[in-house]
Image: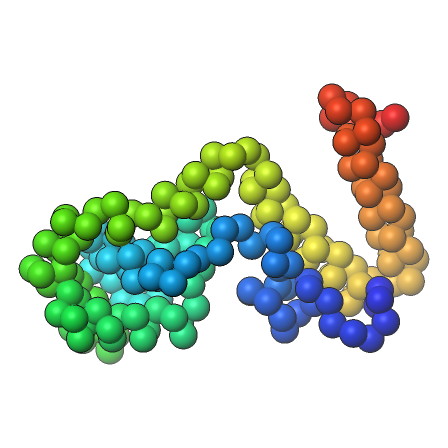
Length: 183
C-alpha cells in the first residue's frame, strides 16, 4: 500500500461513503440551519421518510451534500416539536409531512428554505471544477481496487498511470490551452 500502514483519505472506513473523500473534494460545507431548511424544502414537495429525505437532499445538491442520519433525524424531531412537521406510520416507517403551519412557514420564508440549495448551485455555477469530484472519487475507488486485489505488476502499472496523469495535469497548467497535457 502507498504511504505505509497509515490510513489515507481515500481508504475504506473513513470519510463519506465507503471510499471517503478528501475535505477539499466535498464541495461547499453545509452551515448550521441548512439541514433544517433543506428538510423543509424537500417536504414542501411531498411527504417522505427519513431515508428519502436524505436521498432527496443529495439529489437536489447534485450529490455534493448528503446529510447524515445523525443530523437529519434530530432535526426532524425538532421540526415536530415546533409544529412544522408531523410524522405518520406508514408500512413500518415514519413518513414526514409539513403541517399547515409548516406550509405557511415555507411560503413566508422561501429564501431561507431555498438557501442551502442556492448555495450549492451558486458554487457549482463558478465553473466545471465541481464536476470533477465524481471522477476523482471514481478514480480513487479504482486505485484502491488495484491496491487491494491487483498483482504486483498491476500495482506498478497503476503507479505509472498516476505519475503520467500528474505530469499531464501540470502540463495543462503550464501550457494553458493544451487540453492533452502534452508539453
